[in-house]
Image 1 (cartoon, one colour):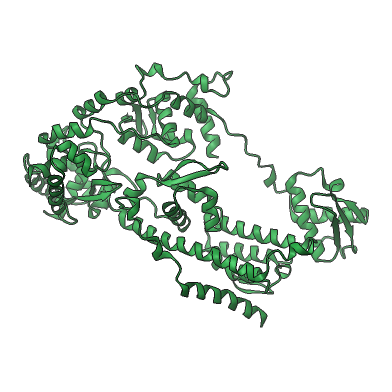
Image 2: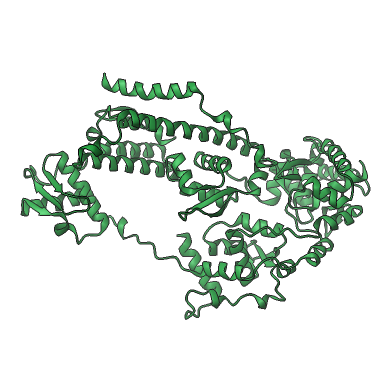
Length: 189
Length: 189
Length: 254
């Protein structure tokens, strides 16, 4: 392992937040090329399944995380229960915030078709979204947090899956329309 | 590297405090002999000069530390504290710790009326607050740090703004903590 | 289970709830004929079978049923012709379709995000304070960036006791049954009266439930009313005296 790789590993170990390559360049006083190479070596060393710690690119930088294989032991040691999975309502509200941010509370409710108070509040309490101001009409406006990126393993918001893949296809639309019409015809019979 | 060594490495990586062999045995559900062997393997892997992180034995337990060789780079990276604007949740949690310290995590949650996990964790990560022990019931107790005083330009905690200045009911002479708890309980209802 | 899938078996409709919404919007089923009480009963029965109340789903249900109630009450109230034509069935379908398509987009994104969250839950991050010697560095380099008043005002917010939540409206005394009785009693005393004169002293919820009671009696052909202009006085008029008194009310859900 090169000296520079070792230093990079130490810096990632110490920093509570993800560290960008630019920050590594400044701290190590090496060139960007050298840092990139050192990161590459470290990435190989800390690939999944090799050690207890893995290198990850999340929240706009590099960071270390424990290998998922040790999750159960870690939760026993830290007496930390597993966070509950997202409910359907929470996942939907989060998807809307993630893709449309900044987005207001009423907008979330409008798209979901139902009031989303409790889902939004839970997401905020879990630190996945946060208020980023108020709209002209006084409604709370939300955006996702850095924690969101970390917990979803995203190196940045541009790493969210391409939204066009979720667009309903023309077949979807036809199917939905037919379903609505068919429901009507059944009634008419 | 054995699976158990990997798990032990992950546990030492995650824990802020030194971990005893007994704790490792409990968390990994392996025998003491197996854990001792895994620790031995890890000790070789993480001997000084090998990686960016070294295995150390301190205070009756095992812990990971950054390699001393990386200290200068660490100073350059960490010299400047991260100071993004505080969210409302963070400001509230910080105000509670600042005025009531030492204060336990459950107390913070009770006063805010909502779980404050992520706000407290972020404040701790940014070095504004730190654990100063455990309550009788095992809950983490927090106080503000020296960094906190620096970042707020305070020469001491007695320089905090007088709470009565922001007090909606100054005629009320009950103690601050009691008042905050009462308001918090009403919020949580 | 999503509310949309709640299986209904009503007099005029059998199928899932979302389909009912669709056909109601298309006016294939007249909302006037739908016993909303039956839907509530179906939902409550489902809850009993299921054993646990999922708050999200319950909220969704309440929002939908409230929307139906509002729609139904609008249909029951006499309205100017042009307003009745404001949304043609085709428009309603297009509007519904557009909304469903938009919602579908985000519900798919939600699935992907939920899976991703699940897959990422195993990775844990270290949150340990810096070693003492490095902490010193950060403190030395720190300068004042935050205003202490930020803490004071945050504390002030926390000291503010929230207003006592007014729960008078959920006291159990406002039942449809009782408002029906009150309404019939009022109609028994005189064949025609002014709503505000008779019930204006009641709180908002009691008044609202009384209006629902009026809708129920309208359905039974016992009462009608006139209101010349929005928010104007409501003249309530008896059509025929209720047969047999207390029985036979309550939304026809039996």
